[in-house]
Amino acid sequence: MRIRYAQCWEDSRLLVASLKPKGRDCLSIGSAGDNSFALLAAVAKSVTAVEMNAAQIVCIELRRAAYLKLDYDQFLELLGSRPSSRRVDWYRACREEMPGRTRDFWDARWVEIQKGIGSSGKFERYFEMFRKWVLPLAHSKKQMRSLLTTKSPNEREQFYDHVWNNWRWRLIFQTFFSRNLMGILGRDPGFFKYVEGSVADRILTRTRHATVVLDPSENPYLHWILTGTHGEVLPDALGAKNFDLIRNALLENRFKVAEVSLEGWLAQNPELRCDAFNLSDIFEYMSEENSRDLLEKILVASRPHARLAYWNMLVPRSRPESLAERLKSCDEEAEALFAEDRAFFYSRFVVEEVLG
Image (cartoon, rainbow, N blue to C red; front, side, top):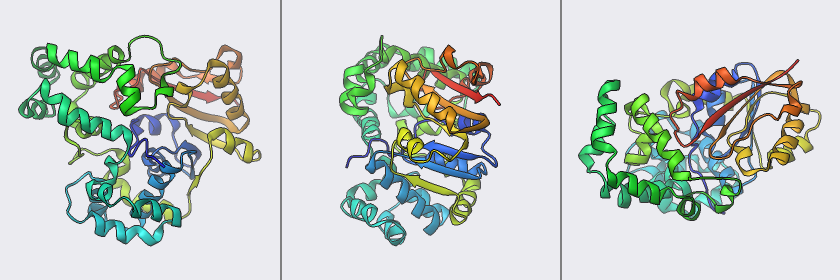
């Protein structure tokens, strides 16, 4: 088993604002679990995390055990959000709370636990390589710290245009975030099957938005990419105010994990209905025909006024016109939220609502 993502790299603030999970039954793509737990923190009635990758399941199960067995500071240390020399101790405190397969998986990975479990995925190792070996070719540590320092919008623009966006930065960005290198080192090559055009150009445009229009000093995703930790700038699932909310929801059995694809879960539970769907960027890897078929299956499993939220990274996907009488596109809402998206890899955020 190989972990693809040891963290969720989609901004949960957009999910919470669009899905309005309070009192709703939510179906959520699992990944590493963060965004499913963020829905719990937003007082969802229930959250079912569906995930077909067994390595991602063990990430979710370890996080679940950590919420239940650790205090808040220990929890952040285990994930790698804060420095620690006791991560193995914190893991051992969680160990008996996990299923046997999850214990076996992590018992064989002491080095990854010591580094912080949030750094153990292929995608995170890709960023670690960028941070250690590539970024220093363009910028000093002083410049990197300056990027993450609070500035006015005008100061951010001046810094980006006159300091950060030099020819070395543009060159290494075009190389390191190319389709081929991302496929080898970061995401699986098959994820680019339906992508057209330059991958690096699209991400570079969004990077400027994240560092000029938005405040990088408040961006947890950018902090991790550039420093390898979160420090005081945390994703919502790791925020202090949400820790007890998530723990209590787990104690109330409002969270389930299903080791199955989204399509498989829908087929296995034809009688169940949900109010909210976190679909991650699932349609990125599907043809238009398969995307439409999955949306039709989701509609069958939806209550009236259920909400769907998902991202496009490089492949444009959204509700086809053939489903317009059953599924409403909430474009203005989605565009307003996307303008505040701190996870800057994506090109579009999509919000849709099931018509009653």
